[in-house]
Structure formats: structure tokens, C-alpha cells
Length: 295
Image: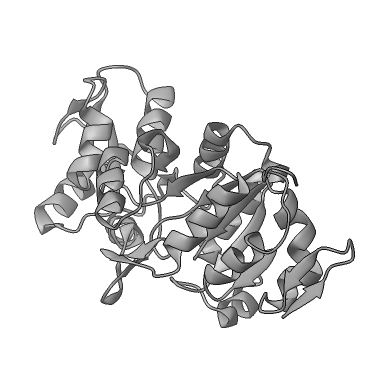
């Protein structure tokens, strides 16, 4: 069964009332989506079931999408491979990671030859040291960079602690304290930030979300204006705040970290909340949108 919108177009009654009532206009007019990845597209190595059809609905509607993730443990090329293994085909240039953004930030602030120490996975080390701009070091370090590290050892924290206490600057890819995996929420980059803050008292410059840098970088890829773009994420304190900082519309999907109770607890209010991406799929397959031919 279908209901009719004010302009006479039929809309599926299974769409959430909030979408029909409050968000239909800006969802229909959206020129692009910025998607978070962990908790939105997958949990760990497990694809979230509603994702393929949602992405197909955007493609059918002619709405481009890019991905912006706080996770620095993989490179864009590795994310393409990971998604491909789940049956999701995307282009490498549409993925922005906090590791890539952090390397760009560092180059804008520090001269070539700066001595750096990284607490993080191989992808972050490659982003920082891969082109030879920075010199890896464990002593006489000018800047410490941290990100999520699923192979973290005490020695890494010890070296970072000593460098920071000796006066090195501190830059973190992101401060997410948890990471959504197929097993549940596990420690994220923010736990390393908390450890280093506890032993040094040094607060890092945080490059990733909730700042606007990642979201704006993805918007630049899309070639859209922020007001015409939707930031879709699973975390209020990173994804939604980043979208708001960048000037986009925001959608929270409840398949990752944040839930409805957290909205009331934090006062962070997205423009729309959906239980799963299936609700957006129904919407985009049921109403005319700007990008679709003939719309």
C-alpha cells in the first residue's frame, strides 16, 4: 500500500513517519552522501545486511557517495579490498581516512625532515612515512602521532610517553574510545589517547571527526555543497558532530555505537534517525529525487 505526499507522488507507508514528515524534502534534494564505514557499512569483517541495497538505491537515484572514516588502521586501497571481499565495489579515490588526513595536516604544520614517532598500524605509518617527508625516530622526536593499534604493545606507549614528556607535539588521528566489531565494542584510538594523556598530561590535536576536516574532504570529492550533502554515521559524538560542523544534513543509523537514549543524554540531535539503512532504501526507491532521470 502507498500513501501520497503533498505533491501527489506516492510514498511507501513502510517509510518511517519522521522521513515523510520532516526529512523528505531535503533527502529528495540531496546531491551526495558522506558515509562513515565502521558501524554503518560493516562491523569488523561482517557486512551489515542492509548495505548493498542501500548503496544500489543511491546509485539508482543518481546520488554519488564518498566514505570518511576515523579508522586509520587500513589505507584507502585496503578498504577497497575489504569492501570488495564483502561484495561492495567502490573506487579508492572516494575513501578518506583519518590517517591520510592526518598526514596531510602534519605536512601543513611541520617542515620536511621532521622527526616523528607513530603509535598505530602499518597503514598509518605508511601514510606518515611513505613518501619520505617525515623521518621515523624514537629519540629527539618532534611529533608523536597516534591512531588505533590492534597490535599495541607496552613499548610503543613507553616510547610515546617519553617523547611527549620531552616536549614533542602530539597529533591523534581520532579520539573514538570504542570500535564496533562483530564481537561488540572494543577499544579504539581514543583509549590510546587516554593512556598517553594520563601519563603525560598532553592533549593532542585531533584531526578526525568530530572536526569538519574529514567530512569536508569527502564533500570535495563529491563536488557538492555542504548544504546539499548528507552525513550518515553511527556515532553522535563523531559522525553527527562532524556533519554539523561541516554544514551538512545528518542521519544517525542505529547499527553501530550510538542509540536513541544517547541522543537524550548528550543533547546531540541529528536531523534524522533510522534503525537500519533499509528505511532509506525504501525512501529512495519510492520517491522522485533530484539525481534520478526524469525527476
